[in-house]
Length: 207
Image (tube, rainbow, N blue to C red):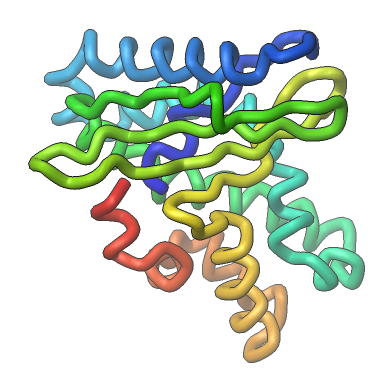
């Protein structure tokens, strides 16, 4: 799941059968930027974070992901709690996954049109990340929906595991135990144990 946001869509008006092309172009754009500055990407985490901050996170439906992850807790949250959670979750995504992109610059990412689909309400773009060292390719499916007339990523499935589902399970456990405010504070403080619970180390090694 570590290439989660490397494949996020570029913002453009919706057109028929365009989601696979948008994903492929975004993959090439982001990875080409990092590969052309490979030494800096490997040595300067802030550079990778800057690329993601500028080029990728604005193109992901972070608000929608936050609502899906909190589920029923979203309805009970105050406007201030919602705002803080979205901001903290956005920062979590940036810092949890950003610097790891540099580890995958030698991997090939392929869009698989025959396994992708799209209608007016949702698109699923199938991709595979080259496994390397004789390992099988990593299957990653991107789920997108129209937001303001543009395709935006709202979930990712890596090897059958949903990014949103994993975080929903982990965060709901924290909320039931300590409450939403405590979860938000942990996210604001950059508590990586929450990430490790939602994205097990084995999945990180796979992609």
